[in-house]
Image (cartoon, rainbow, N blue to C red; front, side, top):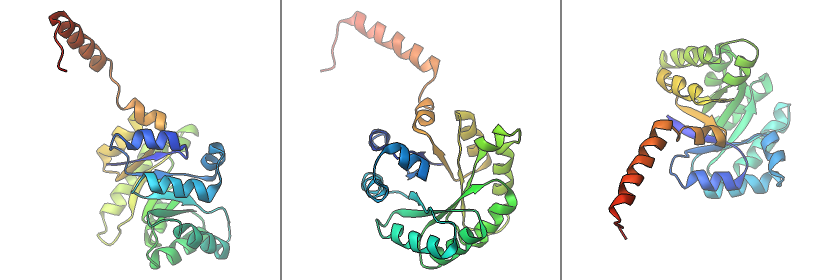
Amino acid sequence: MKFFIDTADLDDIRDLAATGLVDGVTTNPSLIAKSGGKFLDVIKQICEVVPGPVSAEVTATDHKTMLQEGQKLAKIAKNVCVKVPLTVDGLKTCKALSDNGTKVNVTLCFSAAQALLAAKAGATFISPFVGRLDDIGSDGLELISDIVQIYNAYDNLTTEVLVASVRHPIHIIESAKMGAHVATLPPAVLRQLFHHPLTDKGLAAFLADWAKTGQSIL
């Protein structure tokens, strides 16, 4: 499973990219606004830090303007992945951009039917929002399972399942067991994956025993 981080905070991106675990970045208008930077500048800077796909979202809602925005965003860097909403106009834009060789991330997916449409429109990634479905009493992980099953049934569908709206490590582990291709994680959730109390306990014991020897490697 590939890990993307869901943020526009350059400090977090640089810190986590240094681990070698970051395969890409996803942003949205809310995250860009939170960063306090200028949209195009922030996307360019992120693309310089992370060589993998960097999702930059259009803000228009009509196909014509979406396409113009998408074309402009794609020129920022070779690794820009244009992000469009799962609407009729969004899928038209996805088709036009993907036919021209631009990577497209179709976002705000909440049903398997929507995911099938996005794949047929040529999406590089489909972003089902598991956390938001959980919030309304639905099972977000069940949606991941359904989409993976449908995509695996057809060799001509190459769209990758990008698990979004991740709230905790269980979303990641269960999605990985189902065969989802990518998960985009808030930095805090990615950092949670590092930690286990037995790791901390074991390390403390090793260090205590080492200290008793009075030795130094350096």
